[in-house]
Length: 285
Image (cartoon, rainbow, N blue to C red):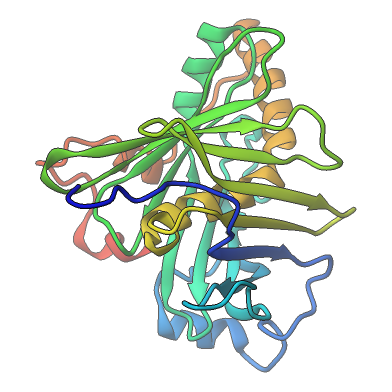
């Protein structure tokens, strides 16, 4: 970097993204005759088994100011019930959530990787989570993997973002040792500094999961922000996923049950030089 090197991290919050999960199924994005059909007509990513579960609010620091402006709603969040609540084989259930703009345009998807979770959990002798994130900004799939650390260490995940000219940045999401909810700090390896936070406020049904970015460069990186948004949503469901994994692996080891891998999950693992789905299936993946 020529000239004065840009300071990374710091105390200034440059961007805030709130994932507000509703406590009820009645809300503005849902109310109205044939509202779901309207969303499906705008994007095939909004599938028939999609249910709107929350909204996305955003606030970005403007140049020359010191405080974030009021939050504005920029989109909504869905869950695919066909692969979650409605899946009869409990071991084969997988979390699939999607982010959309206010206009119904697809932004990003979070998909649980069940087979990888089973393999990682079996090797670690404890339930560990794995998610894939797809965003409109990139053709590259990002994987968020939980890491096994010492017994005294906090909950930890990692992911990386591909940059120009073969460069990439590595990040660690580490749980706070003392917090009211489930709060996490995001550290960047290159500068070994905190660059973002994920704060959780759980409700009996809903909850607010907020991402704050305190790095000026990363606040403008949509790919990075989408990954953290998706991770924030996963926090709502991770305890339920762990319980399912723990129960399922014990049943599998005892020969009582066996999971199946959804073809959409399998497609994310396919050789990129080969097509594993028919052309008319791609829009719904």
